[in-house]
Each structure stands twice: as structure tokens, then as C-alpha cells.
Image 1 (cartoon, rainbow, N blue to C red):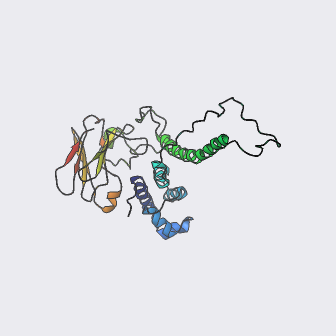
Image 2: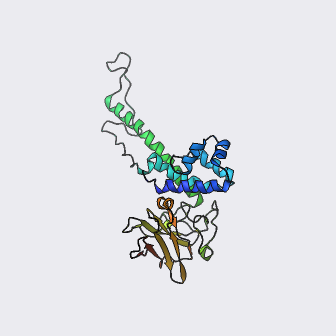
Image 3: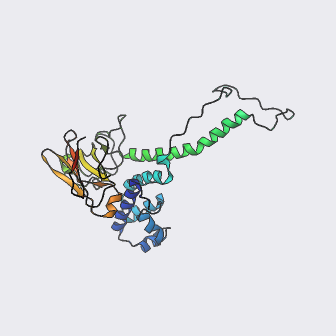
Length: 290
């Protein structure tokens, strides 16, 4: 069975958490929405792409703001549709005879002309190229909308790093900042939402095939470790001088298909952080610095 992309698995996990807060069974969900019981089962387990309206309906039943799940949905939808893997379209370069801006176009032959009712071959090729570009532009517009959704929470500076807390009001608001974030979950505190956190350095691939990286949120002034493609029993630990290390352990097979995060280290530790991967087989730990 194909392993779902981390974005899709993270959305399914978020949907299951929100559904648990509703206290509703699959049959109850089907009774309150246009989607069947079997569809909800597939949505919640990541077996079927979930409609955006289903995400909104579930959040409404739980009394929860839909922003976080909708941002995850945009990323997952890009994976489902293939937009996340589609290369940018090649530009259409006009031929030597193509009129430029402000240049009169070709004169249409009159009814009696030999070529009346036919389109010049070059003009027909240019027109077809323009039509071929339209679906690609449409897909790009959807991806741009996803980026704009994330930017609603926190605009990016030209460097790509999040802006400072002087930015406009964030929705939902971060649940902590600095030392107040120490030991807390980055997801529950809304510190890890799209646009609010960056990787400190490139991700590292371990000997066992797991991937790990350090994340830092300027908005929350806190750091944490992240692991994916891990095995049951693997663990990741993030540490900094003067603070107790924070660790997460991959405990179930469900955990192996999604991102797992350590609790946060509150404070500006960006220059002295260390991330260690502890493999389940008991072999030597692998440690990295940003």
C-alpha cells in the first residue's frame, strides 16, 4: 500500500482529533452532513481525498476555528491533485511573425479570398498554445491561494522567515511566547502553523531512513524537533544549554506515517540547539546542530 504524503497524513490526523472532540459517531456525522458513513471513514483514515466543505462542516460541529485544518487541506489537496509535483509551465515564446504589443494583427481575408474561413498556421499554433496554458494557470492560482491562506496568519519577509510579532493580528493567535512555551505542544499552541515556523538548516536523513529537523517559530520564540518516516520505538530529542531536553517517541504504526514533534524549548536558542535521533534498535544516537 502506498504511504500517504506527510501533508495528507497530517490532515487525516487533524480530522480525527476534531471528530473526537465532537463526540459523534461515523453514523452521526453522516446524518448531519451530505457525506456517507463510509466516506467519513475514508476521510478520517486518509484513504480518500476529503472535500473542503467536509472539513468546514466538521470544524463547525466541533465549534473549532477551521483555519488550521483548511491550511493543511490546501497542502494535502496539492498532493492529491499532483500540483505539488508539477513543474512550472514553459513560457510560450512568440515566433518571428507573431505581432507584438501594439502591432496590428493580421488582416482577415474577405469572403472571396482563397484562404477565407481558414486560420494561418502560425496564428493557429499560438492560439492553441495560449489555450494549453489556461489549465496550468488555473492550477497555479489554486496553489497561490494556499500560500495566501497561510499568509493570512503571518506575512513573510523577502528572506522567507516569519515577521516579528508586530505583524497584524494572527488568527488563531499563538498560545504562548518565549519561556511560556517551554514544554508545550507546538501544534496546540498554534506555533507550527504554515508561515509561523521555519526549519533551522536542511533536514537530515538518518541511517535508518528517518528524517529529522529542527523547527523554530519567531512568533512564539520557541524551537522543537520534528521527525517523519520513522519506525516504532524511534525517538527524537532537542536540547539547549540551560534547558531540560525535550523528547518525542514514535509509539504506534500510525505515528510512522505523519510528522511527530517534540515539546518546545522556549526562548531564543537558535544558535545553540542540538537535535538527536535515537533509533529503536538501540544503536548509537545521531546528533545534529543547525
